[in-house]
Length: 133
Image (cartoon, rainbow, N blue to C red; front, side, top):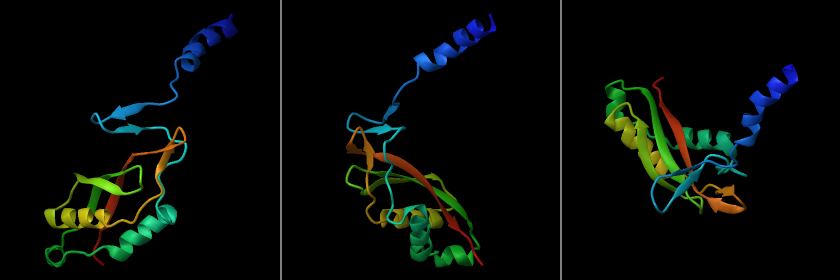
């Protein structure tokens, strides 16, 4: 009896699972949650962090005002690997937010995400830390 009850309760978990969930932002683009291969920055996540550290320009006015924090930037890596649609998800100050946008827009080309054997767009959120020594 216990095995039958277990089977009855577990069956819905297996029979209703979906292969893919698609988030449609508009008529032109769809974003998948499950990918065969996600978009990759040259050098991976470590390469991305090295790029951010090397290319960040802390605004002088923000330094003078002792403004610090983490800016969360959302962007799309499109089917060609280009970074597009850069926006601030959670900002700190306009000075730091603008630098974070500039930095993300300057990212080199990624290798695009792959879904069903074809390149597809993927949405990322990356934190950009601003710290003073």
